[in-house]
Image (tube, rainbow, N blue to C red; front, side, top):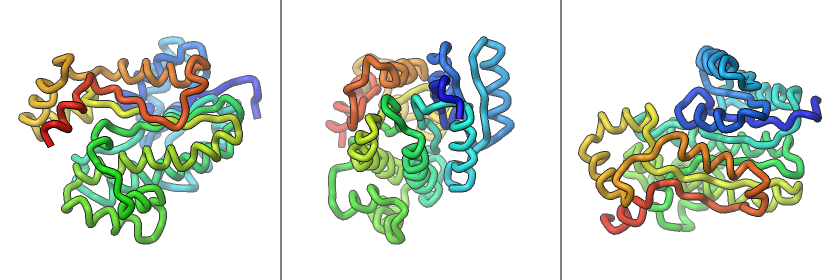
Length: 270
């Protein structure tokens, strides 16, 4: 293991928010991972040309063996400073199981795997969503969301979402926050932190696709935002960069909203 490098690992690193996060770490070694090795290679090449210390590896985050390859790659590169987990799918996937597995089960797999690499000062930053805050606490499904690998967890949550993948997305992003709270003590024993970030409407390719599918809803959300605009990937990335830094060393087991203030108005509409 290279113990001199403090490595920043970014899942979904080929995506809009992932790449924006990478660009905030100009002076630190970065590892990009994404589902497609080709996308990883292209992103690494782009960032390397811009002067970043970057490497990458393809990884199916729903596959434990792939995650083992990822953690081995990270261990060879240095010590873990941060896991920035931006990978995921939206409700536009139209598949309840896919949304549940990629956005929630895989998150738990990564938390467990990267815990083994965590040391004092490490941090895991997980992407949740402002929509997680629209799902009320309820023991019936919260226990399932906090234990997504349990045999009956998917069925329990599925009963709550009326076969709607967008609603499933909201639920599993609540689950991401529950996983964060569930693991805080364990990570804290190592002197490591775990937090979530909940973006609002951020102009990424995923959001632009949602705009095409639900133009009226996306227009309504923009108009309901007190700042009267959508967010940019860089505005999420700047928050992530702060949370990785020592300036955030006592921020732990909490969610940070980056939504332009729209959530308060969404709740009034519900």
